[in-house]
Image 1 (tube, one colour):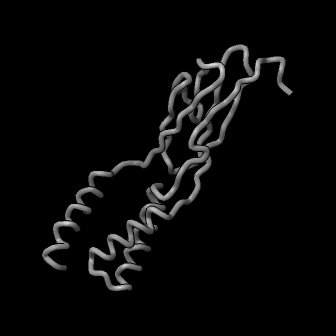
Image 2 (tube, one colour):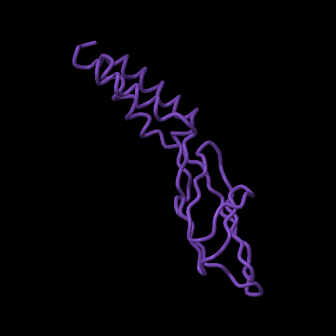
Length: 139
């Protein structure tokens, strides 16, 4: 490793260590009318307009409740998005030495790691906007 690449590699390693924890995603939730109670996976979380912050390691259920209105449910589904993991692996491989085998190995390791941690996933929908239906008006 060259003298120039060593400090960059050390900085990347330190940043990686600082970023420990379960990856989460901020999901804004709004309703019309406002003031609905939001439950994330059955746990009362906030009142609209607000945001929930679920982990990206599994699917989640958002339940929206307001007196006088029909209950609404939204499933947050995980979607595999390896783009960031591939980019991070390419950068790491190039910094470590740049030979094609090293780059390919680092890329595969990064994709595996981000898939295990949940970082390679995004939750969809990324924004929840619901027009509540008054009770008695449901179909």
